[in-house]
Length: 293
Image (cartoon, rainbow, N blue to C red; front, side, top):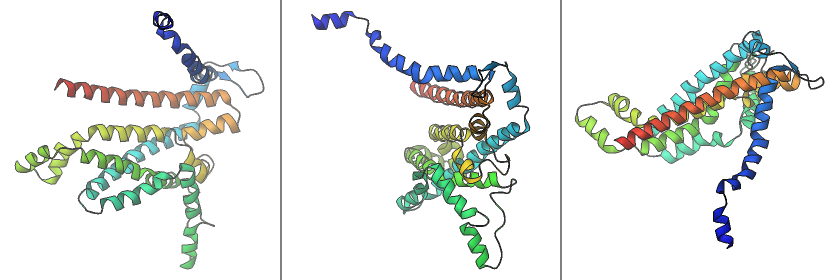
């Protein structure tokens, strides 16, 4: 009788506790953040409705426009270095015998958190107290200002990001290369294709799912990048190396402009969701094509 009673009930009722928890922990904060993006709120006075003013400020205030540019630099740098460089190294390592040793060497930095990586390289590159300065002093000169130089510090921090996540991308590409069947490669070589042509017309198209995963993961993480630029330079000097994530933190919790900070959070979320959706659509479309074939 008990089993019959359970079967007779609507099974979707059992989802209510989980849905309530998700709504409480996820949907309500998201909805409230979207609402705050249209208000002016300093955590003391009640929120004041200002419409689209916060979003206009994001794209008109020089410091925030600079943060958008820096975030763009991070995204482009991510595509060229942690992704492109890891693919090149994966192709080289695939041809040698000591593959495991190189995997371990390149992967070790990936085990560190971005905060630890930022602290480590800050202590290396600091112009007065860093390990690099000690080397320059031993040579009879002083180290140039690197982290405090607004013209190069963003590129240095992208280099730190590359150092940390190169190994993870490398492992993914090596896994992808190992799953490529030998038959298409051998057929292309029999037809007279050289290594460059084999890679361009055979290997790279077959690596597309892994490449898409690496690119999507790298870009999404880069857009939300906070740890390394904050630990190494706190977005400085001034706000020269600020990213959107640092602007969000500064506007919300240092300057107490919660409305403007919420607008930045919404913009970051929209970009992240758009990229995630694009990745899921691309992988789903390719999966359907394979099934049809």
